[in-house]
Length: 390
Image (cartoon, rainbow, N blue to C red; front, side, top):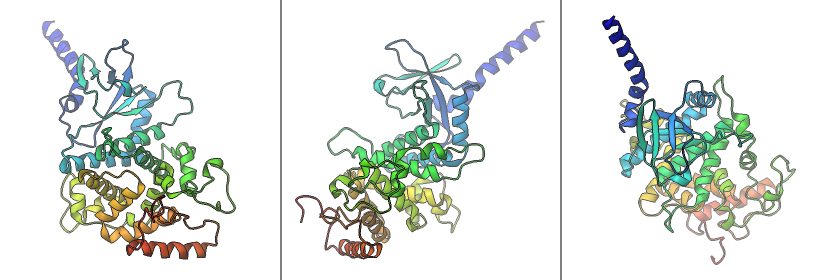
């Protein structure tokens, strides 16, 4: 009998150790792959106690669905983009890369001064209060919420926090760039071909940002008075002041969306730009951008330019700063990026009155082409339309 009891005890110990061993790389801070993730569930804790997190159980419906979103489709693309961003920042800016942690439940942003407690069975450890966590808030009071929208917002904000963290200093990047980048990802996600089992495009399309960005109506003076579903026969006769546009998240999203939809997504930068994003060197004579695909090719270029400006002590504060940082990083793409920016904003940042949006398309195109040439040849700047400028 004794050998049988010993075997049973050993078997029970192995069963108890399985979840701990599976999470050991995360718990000791040594992940085997930087695109892995840990999925946790927030559980009740006493008032004033540290946030308590446990491994999401197998029968957790939300956890099951989130795993599907991250397995393929746009969710997987976001996770890979976040992973390559952390890899890039670790190699170029001394960023301390940590495994991606996703938590289900109400966010604990107000308790960032206290470490969170993670419990896996009888194993307990802690996560620093300032450690990045992507929250999926599935609280019962959030009726009509979208898991995919939460996932996009969480990953988008986390990516910007890596390359241009908000330190609270006066020269910190504007929130409009962070929010605009997230909105840009929401629009891309609404168009991304989904896996067969999960199609979340409709959930993203219900967000007002998608209609605004596609219609490019955030640059018009009356866009806030229009419903997102109303179709215009012709655009409004007046554009918004350029100084307002560059700090508007919808305008930021519209410009980024048009950049990513243009030929710039396929245009490859110097191979050295991509090396910090990759886990290993590509095969000989294979350009690194080919390993990323068109979407992450543009993402890598944007992230590298944004991070380069921030590292140089010139973090972009608004959309003009970001466009200029991109053009400085990739001189061969400056003309097209500048043209797209001016066309999207009707030139309202370079001209005080902008280009009238109610004229004929040919007239508008000619005016914008002339304005783009003036900017590229240095006869006019992208901020010359602001009050107090020439």
